[in-house]
Length: 286
Image 1 (cartoon, rainbow, N blue to C red):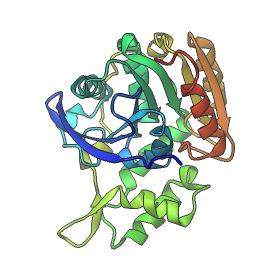
Image 2: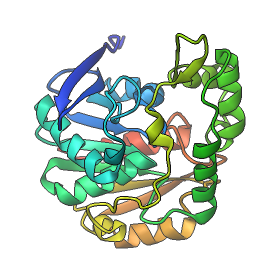
Image 3: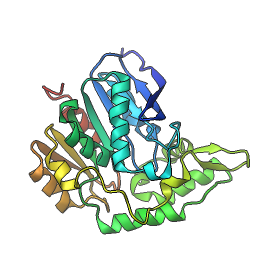
Image 4: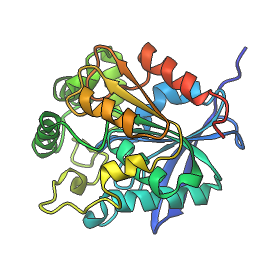
C-alpha cells in the first residue's frame, strides 16, 4: 500500500518578498515546481500534485500577490520579476535542478526561466500557453479581469462565478470540484463578504506592459531541455497552429491535445495526466 503523501506549507523570503510554497513528497527527491496562472494560486495543482508526490518532491508556488504569498509593488507584477522570484525561490529551497510545470502565465514564466537558466531546468511542461496568445482568448481574459466582482456573499456565489465565467476550464468538472477550486481563491473578510485572495493590482491591465526578459519566440527557441506542450482542444488561448510551430521551434519538443477542454487543462484529465507522467518519467530527467 502506498504511504500517504504529506503536505507542508513553506515560507521563504526570496527577491525581497515572502513567498508561500506547498511542498509534498519525499525531501531530497527529484524536484518539480508547479507554477499557476494569472489569477490562480498553488492549490489549483492539488489534483495532480499528490500523484506526482508519490515519486517526486513537489513544490507548488503561490506567485507573488496571490494566495498566501506577500503582495508586492504593482509595477512588479510582470514576467521579469516573476522569473527573478523563481530563481530566488529555487535557491532558497536549495534545489540544484528542477522540472517545471507552468499553466498559462506559469508557462510564460517557465519559458523565460528555462531560456535564461538552462542549467537549472531538467524538463519543462507548457500548459496551454505559447509565445503567441490567440486574440479571442486574450480579449476574453482582459474582460474577465476588468469585470470580476470584488466580493461575494457566500462560497456558492464564488463557485457559480467560476462555473460561468471560467467555463473553458470548468467544463468537465463536477460541482464539488468547482466548489473546491473556488474556495481556495477567496477569503472571508471583515465586511462579511468573500473577497479575492489576491492583490487587486494583479487584475489591472497596464497601459504599457513591462516587456519580458526575452522576446517570447526567442525564449522558446532557447529552451534546451525536453519540453511537453499541452493544449486544450477547445482552447481560445493556444491555437493549434501556434502549438505545431512551437514543436518545430523547440530543440526537443512534443505536444499533446486534451479533448473537450478549453483554457486550460488541469492534469486531472486522463489524457493530460498520463502524458505528463510518461514525460516526466522518461530516462534522463535529472
